[in-house]
Length: 517
Ligand code: ME8
Image 1: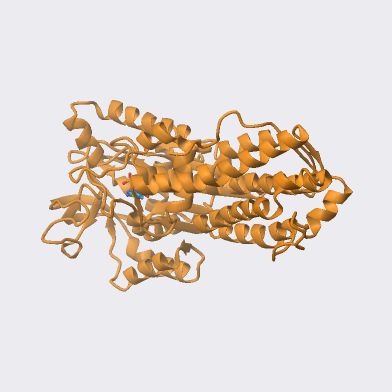
Image 2 (image 1 turned 135 degrees about the horizontal axis):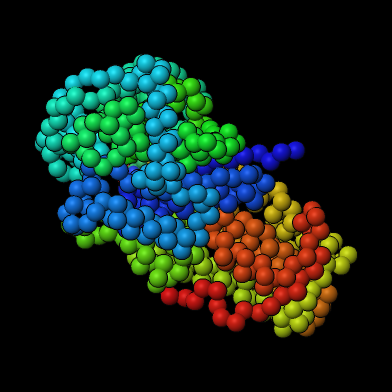
């Protein structure tokens, strides 16, 4: 049977500074989902990249007295390197200033919209917020200023090309209502649906070359430059070879199975992008996963407040797995979440040092000490794995169910259900519930006492524990790929095809996986 494909994208970040924690979180979400899908046999294409055109970028470069190209080259490289250092498993990194990889697709898409009769020239008189790279109206403003950037928008009066967005409003609305474009979470779906009640106008899709020289010239009219969002949204197909000679990736992977974006760019992805695709006769994305914002000390991050969280500092100080673990355990994939140093350290100690790190260390130590690292699954052990074991004190077992039943019937189904719904923090709750259960198992059965009385039973208990840890490494692998691999190599587990353990040949830890902080 051919492998099922899965195409996942992040938004493309403006390459006008180093990545901030919001960018890194978005990359993390997409990476976790991509890894999970690969683990489940999907042929995954995971796209990320940088958005390198627009007024904001060209002005920032100018203020730094740098050529725009060298400015975006530097920043794009910083993004790519940081994503690599976080172990992002992206398949391709698209840059919108790339004339070979991106421009042909962006131009081909424009030509399709034009051929559908959806591009027309008209006069635009209105407001433009450079920070948002968006046309805004008076009602978007607070005290005459953009509420996001605190700056008054610029007045624009010019002859531009327009896209007939209004023509597609009803069609897009129907696709969202029916979940043909599934917007997750539901609150964001409702938010975008309420937008339609205000009425949808056409959108200016280009600007005169004299006003904004840095961008993609409009096909057939180089006196106009494409609006940055028209250019940027095209990345999702240009990166697959749309509009280029070899479009085999596009044929294989489009439509996107999920676009991962932040809440501030929902309108562009749930309204403008589907309308462009409908106009071009292309398939629509299946899902849009909208994450919230990361705040710092309860406030929006801002340089002037001085509360900007620098993800690089955290990786340098605590390691990439510590940052990934914090995202996985403490940042909601759907709501706004707060990032503070105290929360980070608390999470590190609870989940990593005292959680997975301590459990693995104890179990490896006992297996090394009592069995020189070698334990096997014999028939007795198998029976024990399937039923409750007597404790040292002779009590018939604590309430509960046998471990492998618990794992297969309770933990794993809950984990997969949450993963399929992108409920990442809930999915990791099931992992740490299992970690606690294994800690409790040690407390209940006291293998450190039992070993003096009944070695066979002690072996059974350790096989159970090692088996539990091996399940944890599988569940953890999308979130903490390096830790998962490290633990797997220490367990030296051999398994039957159905996952039943045959034996373990463990190594002891030389240093703690996660020293307490
Ligand atoms: O919007 N917390 O780029 P961008 C979480 N180039 N996510 C955040 C965040 C925060 N504090 N701040 C920003 C753009 N983000 C366009 C996208 S796609 C065709 C073009 C998220 O660099 C934001 O919501 O401003 C977005 O998803 C991503 O970072 C890039 O933001």
